[in-house]
Length: 46
Image (cartoon, rainbow, N blue to C red; front, side, top):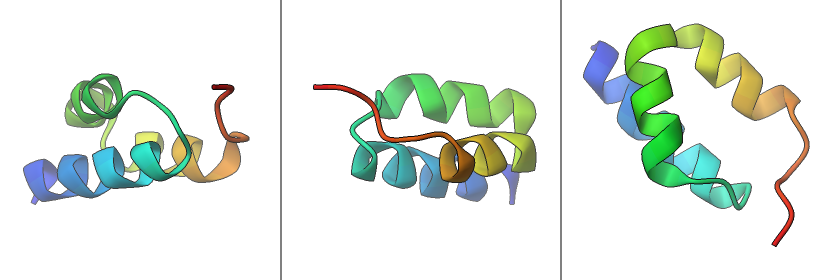
């Protein structure tokens, strides 16, 4: 389940123009907290 959440977070991060790999790894460590951060933080700069 934790791995699935990390994959979902990677997709969310990519949608907000953030590093997919970095957020995937961060999600493996933080889980739902990383999801919250992705949703709350503003999109990244190009």
